[in-house]
Structure formats: C-alpha cells, structure tokens
Length: 384
Image (cartoon, rainbow, N blue to C red; front, side):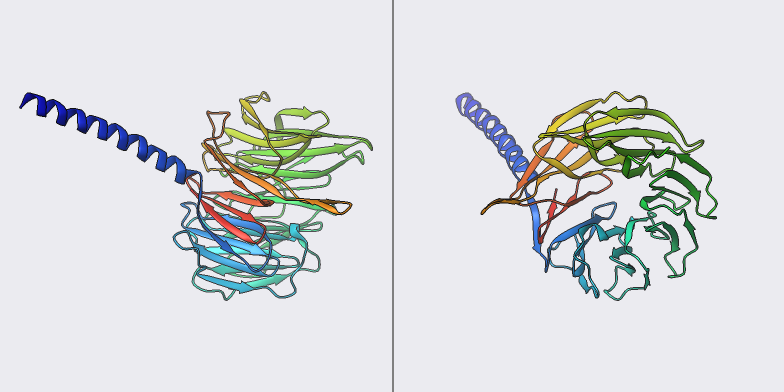
C-alpha cells in the first residue's frame, strides 16, 4: 500500500512538472507567433490599435480597414478615392475604446465611427497632410500640412482653429485629454492649448540651414516633450535629442549623437521613459532613457534599421520594428527582411521576437503592452 502511494505521489509530481514545462513551452511558442494575419489589397503603411487592443485600423494606398482583434476578417473597409502612392502621406489614429478613428490619405482627412465604413465627415486640403494625432476619447484631432497646423473636433470638418508658421511642419501631437497640442516645424517647437491658436510657448531651434527632419513625441499627460533634431553638414549627419518640460519649454537635458541618424521617438505617460533609435553605417541601436538624465538605462543592437517603435502607455513595454528593405543591384535583388521585438523597460534583451521575411513600415502596441499590430507589405499581423 505504501509502495503504491509513493508511486502515485511520484507519478503526480512528475506529471505536474512535465505539464508545467509543456505549458510553459506552449506559452512561449504562441507568444512568439502571430495570432492572425490578413492580406490587404495593397501595401500597408499605417496601423493603430485601441487602448485595450480590442480594435485595429490599418491603411493602404487604396483602402482603410477596421478590425476586431478576435477575427482576421475586417468588420468593414473603405475604398479611398484619389489615393496617393506616397507612403508618408498615409496616417491613422484610433480612440481609446475604438469608437472613433481618423485617417489622412494624401490631401484628405477622414473621420469615422466604428459602426460602419461611411465617414462622419472629411476635410480636403490644398496640399498633402504630414502628421495626425487624436485625443484618447476621439474628441479632438490635430493635423499638419505644409506650414499649417489644424485642430478639429470630432463633430465637424470645420477646424476649431488653425495656425500658420510660414515654415514646413513635420509633426504634431495632442495630449490624451485633448487639452494641449505640440508641433514642430523647420525652425521652432510650439506648445498650444486647445482653446486658442496663440502658442503658450515657443522654442527656437536656431536654424543654420543644416538642420532638417525634426520629430517629436509628447507624454500623454502633456508634461514632457521629446524632440529629435537632425543636422547635416554636407558630409555626415549628427542627431540631437532634447527633453523639455512644457511648463517653460526649456530643455531639461539634451544629448548629441555623433554621426548618427535618429529615426523614431516615444515617451511614456508621465515622461518617465523615453525610447529612440539611431543608425550609423551598418550599426543600428535602440536607446532607452529615463527623464532624469541623458545617460541611457540600456541600449540594444538592432539587426537592421529601426523602421518604427511604439511604447505602452506607462512605458513598461516597447514594440520595435527593425527592418531591411529590398534593393536592386544590377540584376540581383536582395529580399526584404524584418523582425518585431517586444522589450520590457527593465531588460535590455527582448522578451520575444518575431521574424518576418518582409519590410515592416508600421507598428503599434496597446496600452498594456499585451497586443501588437504590424503592417508588413500587403499583410496585417496581430501578435500577442
């Protein structure tokens, strides 16, 4: 009897350990693979995901798609007229609960609800739009084109206000509650309240004819702004990273990246964490900072150039797309390659990675970091 009991206990123990290992293996296996994918009608160049990951939007040259995360079949799609073949002229945003979405396609801004594919309204500009952002509840939309910044309400295609600087805008970001907007043009960084086009603060970048392609990110609580400023002297590029407090729009710190081309920037809710990526020749690096100083918490050598990064709301997780586009040399052509990484803020090594034999131009992560959406050639991938 005792022998049988010992055998039974040993069997249960071995079985439990084996089940634990097997379950862990399954979790790891599925954690590293797409939950579903969907083939679109054209190349995907913008994606966005709602806060809890329940709803997804994606845009191609010719169509706009709206998904529930539970099904690879779109809830609906919208065919775009007068479409452009310029990737940077396609942008998408979605509200916190997925009730509203907006998209810029070349010269037209569309506003949608999640109920059907008929736009609530649209606004057509005389020149292409360059950036787009939306408050969490979808009530306010900030958008730039050429030298003009617009602020819209979700209820109308008549701008609440517009601001013209005379210089080309490259980016605009709106706070999570829609109360504040920051924007950068070729010469200045601006900070606005939603109530007026009179700026609350301006930071001049002292242009010398060598700086170009500025990019910004603002913490969702509108307390901090991160700015990438690239400088070209005719032979090489240096990049500068600035972190500002919005109370006085003065840098609290800055960092120069010699002979590096910084690509993308993201900031967490209260500015606690900042991520940027840079390339110098064949070396590609991801940098992760706190708002306290300009010394990185950690760095990670990326396999290829970083095409896009996206940070979870409080900065705990970071989704990174590192990709290599195809190129032709004589009669040969190298294939596109890409990899999606998921990082935790406390670890310089990725939690997992997912390799894709294609270029990855766009990626987005949910607030909690549990869901990632990626646009890959003419496919949309949903990963968890």
